[in-house]
Image 1 (cartoon, helix red, strand yellow):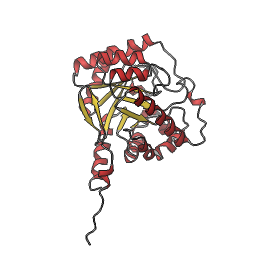
Image 2: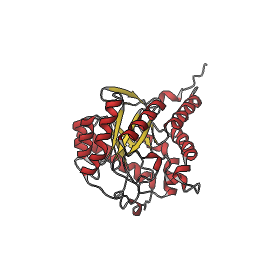
Image 3: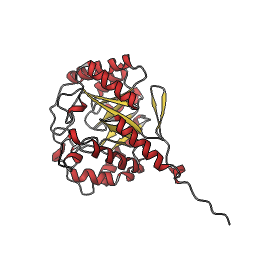
Image 4: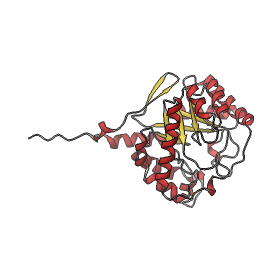
Length: 290
């Protein structure tokens, strides 16, 4: 009797995102380039403070193969200073408008946990909202996203950027993060949000050791039945492990990006686009024949 070998690749869920009427297929992982309008980001190379710097960096990222550009005006590093909504808007709106004017086909994600900022950013041309709190820091966020009907990244965090590193006690880290995200998914679905992306929240209310535990368990997050975004680029879990700095953490970032792809990541949020694109290309070659 002839034996048939099951092709495991057909079992992998195929996800798409509707971004301003464009259907983005995530069968091949995508790259999200980081554009920070914050003066106190942990990595200086990720900051772009003038409009010219923003446009130059955006152009390089798009040329290198970024599918999304993630524009943020509120620093979420541990202990970051809180700023007003107006100050955040003053940082992100001119950047979004300038990018759209120069690169009309660019798909911009706005990195914010505030519903008002999300709404005005989408009106200015953003195609996605990336919320570090998954709607827990602004109760209006989920309804706002449902009205805007844009893809929504929901990240796990406990507390806020100002106090999250005092909230790293877990009895079952991966199980608790999974439960939290599943609850946020349910809340989002109930108000009518269609395109959801989940982010385990590396570096947010997690110790260095816990970050690596989550990364080892990344394939378990496929149980959420949502695309996965992973953001480990140049973070302290890398440079502290290597006894170096964020400026010298590119090699470590690239290695962990490959590991994240193997664990099921669909989007990599990165500072260094060309290196991440090469990582995806090589991972895709390795997957051939699966």
